[in-house]
Length: 110
Image (cartoon, rainbow, N blue to C red):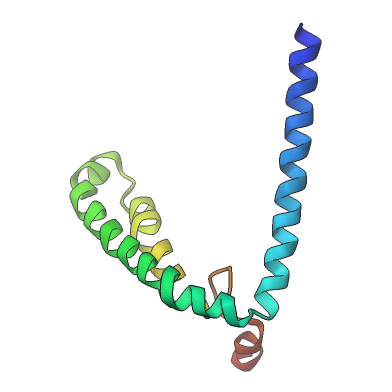
């Protein structure tokens, strides 16, 4: 029985790691050249939702600020509740799957 549980956990871990690697390579491909539908979906659906998440996260940060201050984790709470959603909303290129500037903009900055 113990061997069955261990082998099941091992197989599940291997399957999950393979899916993570496949998703990572897919995201790299999408980062290079987002298509028309990716850009339109991002503009019409994702950006307004992310803007809402940013506003709700800022409100949650303000509400949790006294508790975060007592716990000593104000920077972490601000980063997770406000900075990350805002970065996904305003910094990510249209249709890209990762935050940050695209490859073309990074080359122009250098």
